[in-house]
Image (cartoon, rainbow, N blue to C red; front, side, top):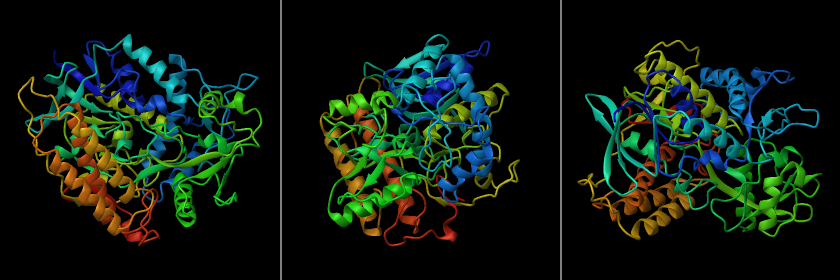
Length: 535
């Protein structure tokens, strides 16, 4: 069955789009996800939703200013204005769908302050179970409205015909190869925390949509800006449990190996992660501490986290909590205009898989769920209008070299040649068994190389060493048929190569990209690095 719209991914961005599109009369809408519908990175999000709602003393201008400050000079102002202005409506719509956010005793929505925010504007659900509640509300709505739901299907590559995306090649649950065709394809496949050995992301976060775009030479930008969450619990569990920024917003203190406070707790995440990395390196330790012993009513405020800590044998009223940075969020992705259109007609992107320009060089805490809601909705409105390709708006202005409708200031683009496709070719249907146990070993090798060479702080030598290891992994997996394990490994290798190329080219420290040999921001590098672009 050919569809009008196929959404790849079942996080907040993809499901926000499906919910709206499924109500358009006569429109055939499908969602394809490689796990169950409810299993996405959204489900793991402990952070909340940052939005300025009616009755707040806060202002959208202040939310905009905080976002721009965190983004370290690379945010697109127009995209951020869209986010903060349209966000409150999208939050209200989510509440109308049945999402239940935490409230004060008098009934008003509770608001917390997180890192980089100048005031309390972050909504949470179930203490620190916001993502799970957002996902629950959206999944329930999608199950009742979508034309087709492809669970446990793994998208391998885009199908491009006549200069247009017309679907995807995917592995079905039985291991066979299938084409799923649609007039429009939406990449809402999430991030790529599995590039690293220590991450807060689920095992499914392998950058699939971005890698598919790279192989099709669709412009991808800002992938060097991989944000590390500073306060992941130092614990064998993977993905790493998060100790939410909300704890620091309520007064928890960061302490070094000697027990001293060493950084402003509510600084943006890149600042805190770098300070932690430097402190750990100086003292020769693998973790630091979060002191939440002074917080009142911990179990009542953070019931989900209290349960997790108890399971780990920790009592936050007594124990300092061991922490270390963990790979958390990719600020870049597939380049889009302000409606989610990519440079390839028929292909759209939203959420963590997209580069809208909202996050710049470093995402402001709790803007990610909001971005998915806002731009997932804008995408659907554009499709309803009959839009079929990108306009020169947002980050697409410089890429298309047009005047556009935006006010700028425009950030120029520096092009890097698109990456070559993987060496394996798509086999005949039924021959998609993968490569046995080898993908797991090779994946671990890639992750360790990326953690050592392209983590919180980088250098030319560390990046070169990681690039050599990634190339070796790609060579070792060459020629194997693309089952899910092999396909995920290929996607990680393609995206890792792009990240390393960008990080090597950007000889400065900006936002989530820190170079030991170039510790300051360079005004000459206030520009985007774009793969798949000749500009």
